[in-house]
Length: 162
Image (cartoon, rainbow, N blue to C red; front, side):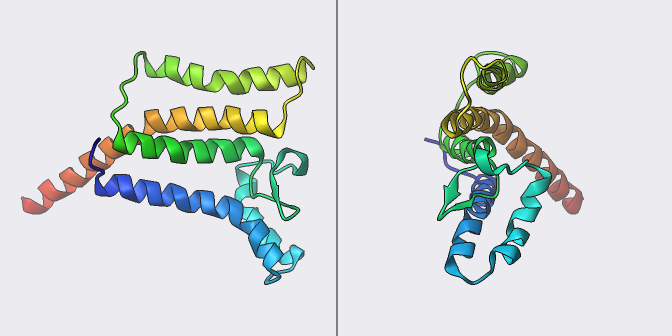
């Protein structure tokens, strides 16, 4: 088991915060602190990254989450994947291109099956396919983010010592 670096912990906390923001709007509306009309301000930031269709979103207390089921899966999958990569060394057995293709394939199959009426996409299939993609994305991207941060951090230290 690896020891997490500061940037690993910061990344995990940041992603956890993002996931929290996704699920908090229904709780805010339910609490009565804000009217349904005022609650739209909690959904608005996510509207630029997700369609937020009512019928494609999970609901809590009768109110939808801030993003659709597939996006929810992607973000929570990314969260889990980042935790895994932080504590376990995962070696990719093929190129990044191949891994990205494998990761996106379940989403493509789900969408195409739905379009051609072979199988109707459900909240669960959307969430699961998004979760797979998000987890794999974290496995690929987290080490690259850490490496980029470390290079930038060490360059800054070296410059300040000169």
